[in-house]
Length: 397
Image (cartoon, rainbow, N blue to C red):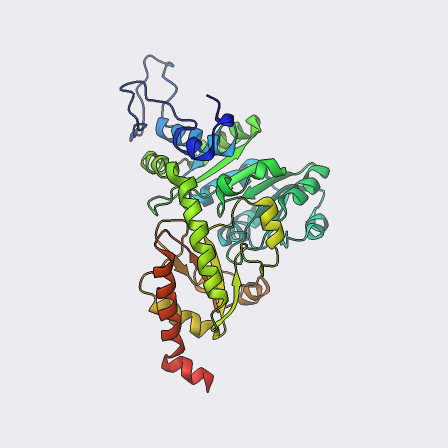
């Protein structure tokens, strides 16, 4: 039965999956091996060395491709390995890229510390404004890379609008869809050429692995990615691929719960007197609420909020959390709380962070699958403890 005729919950469990040829195991086997035996000189079964390809990694690629709606996908050791391989596959010295100003901090670091020195340059612009993207395009621009929702303020980019600009200039458009996955946002249906995922996050969903994937309808680009992946050695590891294959099965069901819990917490935070502002696309107060409703199938599991007490209030609140874990990642079963200005975006110039809306008082919550009322109780006691801390009282005086 074609995956096109199946619902997402079915695709997540069955899509792109085949039984192994040896024992027809319901779970695809873990091929934890570095190399494969050749039948004869120059004759093998399609595999020779796990830096090039591996059956378990191939199985994960087919499962992700089924969700993305593409013929195939390419999997990598980390999300940054995926982005690095993509950029080395498409760009050469003298080329230029336009990227979201809220793109993952590691991507900014890749340009500034590596690619700029190789003559490959990128401009980070406000892609929520299509005119800014149009103005940033040069004759040497080969790629537009957007992240929507952006990290950590969840600023959105209109994918269809940027796709029209990209096509008018014959430029490829890549979308980092990590925060929503193909379940909640369909970049290809909106005109994108490339979809990027950090499988570390919601695809795995259990905080057990790191990984990345790239999907595209362009078969030549897919083969180019495989060649550069082989050259750089950025292929996903078999064990991580096997674990991710299990995690992906529950993706649609998990995302429904993530979205419901995040909305409940966002609503509670918005009503809290100590909170200055809440960033969540599912709230009517979110500036791009209408765009979120138009291009997304859900608001996602990430909530960011700013405390009126600023950096010290954020630090104290985070340090008083008991149920929510202080950690930098997102998308897992456990709720994680992050202080972006000292973790994910610490490498950015403080003035740039402020310009991007990443204040020192901003906290990002990756809402897990615990009961939302338990999470709210934890946030409530942490905010109260911070408010009554001697340092906070001194600031008020």
